[in-house]
Image 1 (cartoon, one colour):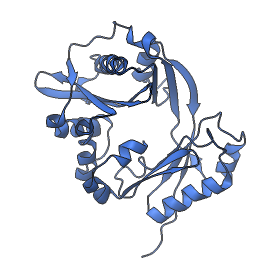
Image 2: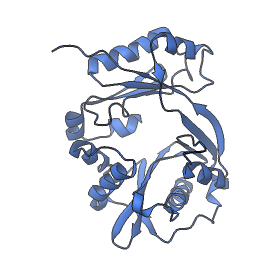
Image 3: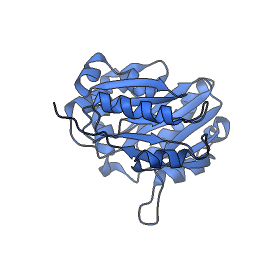
Length: 265
């Protein structure tokens, strides 16, 4: 989350009102002009390397308020310290947000899986695919049309370095995309989306396998990824693919949403 915000261009930062901070051992990303209403403003990884204190919570809320974001979400792992952090966030007025399921596992085990097939053509993406990538990400996640946000998404295939993007093609049309972010010996799978018309053809599993192979080629030993939890009426194929790859569900990470007060100009 931090790098996706911090690595964005100056044009994206200006158009969307973006900022990224390291705070309390975790990260805080802020997007003022967020057409989703606050999805991209998050405080993540607090309470892991240092305690999640009242002061840190207040600092996050103050930064979010000063930046003018519509909402900011705390995503805190259940094993974060102190154990009463949930009560602390409740007392500060947080309301329940969308939880995420965290998966993790050895890359060698996952990369050995060869049964994730698709009839689509899977290959790496480059800067020449930027616009198509941005469109697929926005459409696949069902986010509102917004030129500035889509232009930000479109920058991902241009980053290089720690980033790697891959797509699935139906003939000449890009219909699914995904990100790999490498940090040390960990391959983080993120940003996978398929347009509605191409779902059910194995794109996501094949894109996972492609990213695992790339991560292995870069010397990664571990795989980290997350997704939203499924329910009987709302199945999530991502979870099934993650388990098929041998990844382990570590925990359900709850969320608290704060909506800063709107101040008069």
